[in-house]
Length: 300
Image 1 (spheres, rainbow, N blue to C red):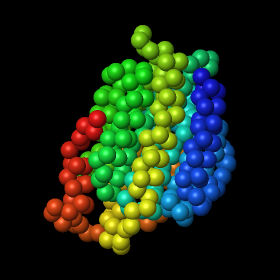
Image 2 (image 1 turned 90 degrees about the horizontal axis):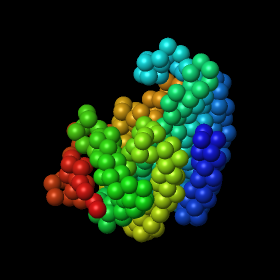
Image 3 (image 1 turned 180 degrees about the vertical axis):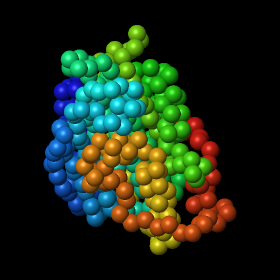
């Protein structure tokens, strides 16, 4: 399964980066391969200063070896080896009317002293972070997510949508990072679902990503914007940074397993503002967004 899924994310990385280069029409992804001393490595692809994308990355990695102490404590084991692989992407567009997007699909195995798998699971999801709210965009993104989920189980979309709303929540701000999407973790084998069923579901979600995001980019990329729109985008990017550095499990996992810092922090936007006690004007489009972020909404 680990080899099968890694081959899948290798191909998916190619598919996504090729399409995004077409959409951008200017910049190309820079590829950077790296190795992890304890075992494993990855292939980082970053795009910067493009026509559409100010900064973005589509990364794959696989790491393996002895469980770090922090994970041994988390899993309640004295020792053991692990394997983890995944694809993680973040795209920060230039135009404030085009939303930021994040997605991640990953697989994990843990072994006993004899090398037998003692646990394995899939995780991942995708979420949209707009700076100006277009409800039809939110509906489109969630509709694609729901369609992909419904092919596998009717309960998946509502369950993973709610999990996403809870996860991407900046507790110190009492607001969501964005308008959500899907988030799932610890998808293990059960009497109802085999590990192959889990693989089929996660790859379905991965394959649907471009359909969920690219039409939104195409629709909004030509909207004219002024400095005040860019300022607002950069202020909201600050909230994005806060979540990633304070709450995000993937960032913390990478830092605690001696991951590659440049790849882990690829998700951070290039230009950000933190203005003291900033509040948008009541009734403005900016205030409309903040209002929606205070209470998760059903988009489909």
